[in-house]
Image (cartoon, rainbow, N blue to C red; front, top):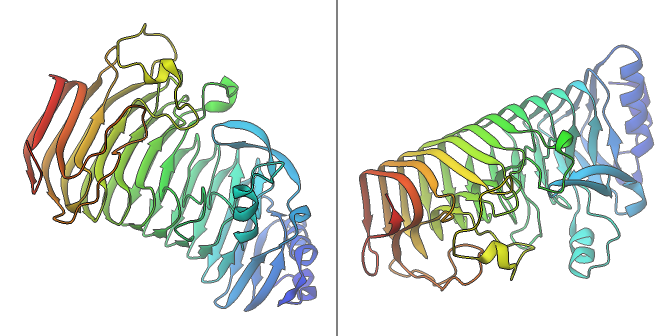
Length: 416
């Protein structure tokens, strides 16, 4: 244990930010090592890791996010696809190498006051994330429990060689924008053996939006997601809607989704540009999901009523035209689905290309709820609809079984 950390009180009341930061800095000055946090409850504001530092939370150790907004100073960071001034994360750093957060302890962001201010539109800057590193390499988050994040929970940005494993994430179902794990323009990422139960998407892959500086976008690529259980979020594994820097080479395997609104979801829109390609999802079980599979190129969040985004007719192809291609789904079972078995809607000027489903079973719920299958202008509610696809080129269905639907099992239009 660092001598500086001995000055921490750990009673859940006294502020231990300085003691924790001093322990990190002192260990870094000695060339790196592990800062061990023993059992106790440590109130802390934003702290910054250094190169070659492991922050290890022993069993019974709880980091409690400070309730003072001043403890999260304004910094420039990417939020929702573009760089802007945000509150600093609880734990973070920029341009680091060989950093880790490990152990059996808990990081509790105590996000309720932040959620209330967000709902009241009383925030000057976007809320802090719980853990966020940028432009860093060899990043590890292992074993911890993360809960009550003010916003996104684990958010690496433009990082390489990232591992998030055996992590448990709990955020209340009504907490806004509390995604679980959001790799953003990252390369070589492994997410495994995690349990994620949050108020927004469980895992989301992003790469910036069209107004972001092109030099800062970068692709999100070479992503492996395996052996995870996910519950209650807006989506199980989601790509987008920030896709301007491209998302490619994604494998999703051996996962279970329960009660998520969507299962596997790709969302983007005109103007965003970028390519989503080479995605494979296999050996997945879903239960009580509104729509197991969605691909929506009319996603209208922050763009409702936009005539370009909403136009159902063909428009000129340009650098803002998104592309989705080479997607594979196999060995997947979804039971008790609600709105539709699948909702796949490409653009007439740029159909979704080369999508294959094999050994896929979807059983609709007898007590299905009615609702809009995706966020897009002009959609009608669905209930127990079948496999809906429009504007697709090269759709292959092999041993795909839809049952319990109301009406035709396959609803295909402008599909080859």
